Image: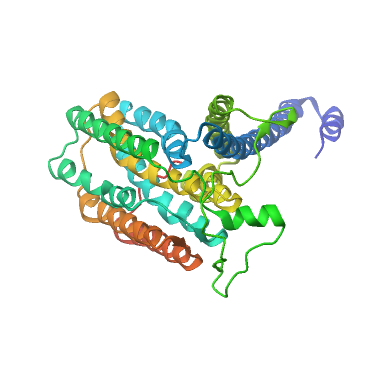
Length: 395
């Protein structure tokens, strides 16, 4: 029934029915208001997602430009700019301050496991490629979840533990920075994709989806896989420090996009009365994970796989050290559930070790991605059927 029809009908009725007519009109206007609010929430949700994706694309571009202009390892820039998850830390601290320490701890495990089981897995499936990550970094990556064992065994987690965890991440960054600044190896190594961009001939693929090697493909190069130019001046290559400044701006857009998307998600849940767990496990998780998916898949596809892999390694190491440490320092102690030591931590240790092994082969293959994705799905299935739930994901 439309508004005009409702008014006409009410005018023809007996005076005693006026109250009912007014109620009908009120319900009609209320329904229209709710519909408009729901539409606005959807618009906000997808606007945030668009900003998220655009900012991720620009961050990749400017980090490549900075690495080429400053002759700095793109792997180091990836760990510093994309591995440190500022939005994750903010959410974890807020949860712990609100006495939701178990949920905050869940974000640590949920994010780290999803970085391997979703982000790295999809990168391998979508764009299998050669990778050349130094073995010491892979050893640190594989061993990083193990540092949590003594802290969890001697729970509760306290701010003192937080200080130690933050210092461990500082040492990790210091080691990587010292090693990368001293290395004489070129910044970019995926000359196969560089060759494709330069001569217009793509690499052939095998039945498994892996790129077959070419004779000049393994020749290292300092030339970036694509030209990075100044905004509004496509003829002028971007200087290194200007690229750093623009990368910071893109990072701010990334965080803003995630915040807008989260706000839209909350509105959708309230306006359409959708179950939070259902929406969070499907649409919201997919969109919020797009940030890290783009920061891993796109660099690999564009010829800078170290940027994508650096995002995964940096995020996992940061998550189990400094992220948890900052949450403890800002929000106080956290009690640890027994399932963390018996289930969630072993899964994280196993998947991290397997991912490190795949990367150590120097070729990220498509079947690697399917294995990691299958393990992630199995982890969620067992978590819900046996343990009653899995840690919250936040990307």
